[in-house]
Image 1 (tube, helix red, strand yellow):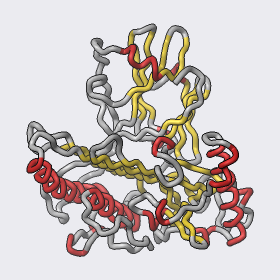
Image 2 (cartoon, one colour):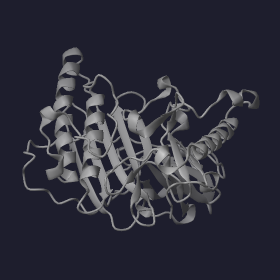
Image 3 (spheres, one colour):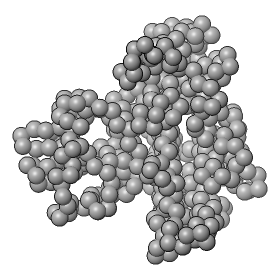
Image 4 (cartoon, one colour):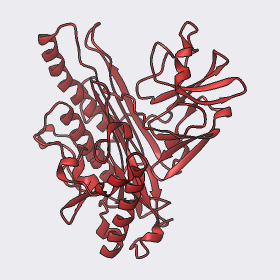
Length: 416
């Protein structure tokens, strides 16, 4: 990539699978971690930095800003949950680094780096990069408490590090419905990684979901989010050990590296705080060329946890208008990639075979026999999100389309 190019990146870098010491669900609650500060060690001086000139994002005053990955050979202390790293070179000497936390789509726009989180955009000047850019935190709604839990485990000296990372910004104390939603999702994702479920779809969420199998005897209501995250980290390690032993029996010199990440943060709240939209980001890595990223947005009743469908927020006529605008935006996007004569063959509607996510039943809606992303409310309009492989290739990343509120004038709920 060259200077002043306008290129989209969706970077998701491995995420996280931890294991935990076996503790009872009834133990004293652990205080949630308040801060998430990363330190980046001094760049090693023996690496061939000329390699990165092919990944140039911006150049100025004999300086070059390049993109790199969180490779331990390059920068010590950068974990796999960090999506990518910007390296500033003066002439050919590396002089500064900037970690891009989380994963978010970003574009190069002249001397600005534009990072998008749903319908919001954070702009950062290439000439004044901070040590760390966390778009989610920068756009965070005030008044939310951070719950985080992370661990890394290995089974022996030759096995790979397996990472598990959990982070959620919730009211304090966390509403029970948010804990049930988190538990249900963690249960679905962890089990689907090890093919423990017949289908990889979370049952329809209605705000009262148990969040796990009854046989597990997990008491979500009595647990804080950190304890829930710890519980599923323990389940993750238990399932991984079996997988590890299967690998060892077939190939003793190869061990699986499985990472998992779950991030949840508020994106939007309406004027009377009765409705809330959460951004949920997950990432699973189970060997191979790349992992499986997902990023979607759910709007819920902030008190009961009821998940809003299009019927709750707009009339059918408005929903049809919104889908027409969505289809138009989707085709306009595809027109930048394909010849004009085949654009009409593309559609915003999905078939059952197109569905990708392990929690498809709550992030998609079925309308007239076709599936569409569940619309989420944001400051800028209705947000529709497609996961990788649903509406494009993996390299196209996660696609977000915003339908402005002006296209849906009869909305049943107000927005900020």
